[in-house]
Length: 474
View 1 (tube, one colour):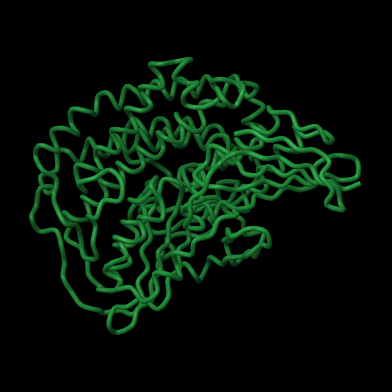
View 2: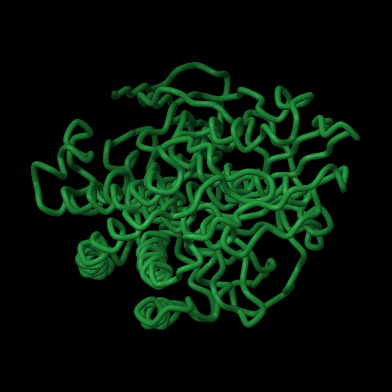
């Protein structure tokens, strides 16, 4: 008799979702689905607003990645004005994005994911969180909190506040980096480097003790997409798009991000508000691709900084072609944190960050503008269509969590096949399935532009909808 296990909602992610695990007549897993059950509709209620307001509006989509929406929205405004922003403004936007990567990746690694592989899958949920991590390893937890704080300080120094800074605008930015701010960032760099080294040592040990997770947590062939410079160097706020396959071969390169609709299509699925983008030349689901840290490191040939380049070489040695295990998203995040710290360090010697030439001015020169930037979780697209008065007529946002949707479904199914047996619903099984989602660090607030509470309910249903088993927590 076919049955279904529902994990509703999933915990320790940004937002509210549920997982359905389908069992066949023999009690084995046949399929799995990741449902996003929130909806708020930012794309619709932005219609009619002036495009110039969008960098102030869209960061409210999320409190974790507001900088990502701020920068992508400002870039869309640049395109509507058809201007090249001043070089200092570009460098300052990049500096804020580096701070955003550091704070978001530190949150994901230390707060959301590390409690699983450091405290153990069987640890009770009430202890398996950042507070349990503090109790078990106070210094590590403190270092992780401080590393996130460093990224937030970079954002606050530039934008005036850590969350929702009204700083980047169409045509540039509002203010430069002060000398006091430069000194404060410089003083924090040694500690940031030291914490990152501790995290590397920790996760490399984890890879040795969690070989089964590396093998089964979302380890499958797919495409990968991310921004790169013309020579293949890792990029986070410019460049062109590159697609590679699971063998590491480049299948499309130097694609113009503003023409994303020529090679990315979106599929809708019943039971979820989250759309599933795919590489349109291959169709759906064959065109499934992953974005974010794992994908960016797979498409890049170098990170562009010495310490991170050495780590990238080790990372690429973990795959035959591309690195395909989603459990290694955690390793990729640490390499990106290191890259960002090194790049922040380099920028501190650039006198142009104090320039007062920060903004280009122009009117409406294009009725459509697309802004593309790498957010911590993956490539982010803001696509605005305006009228002659600059009022928005259409808005389309494609976020990383949506682009990873097909891969998250496959990850959940793969993990469930190895740990789910019959109608029993053990806690450790639930947490492993959830952790498959946490590898991607999904931000459901961004994906459907809403927020939600996160208790957990798991239901096992028969084919007639009858409740066979139920487990709750939170």
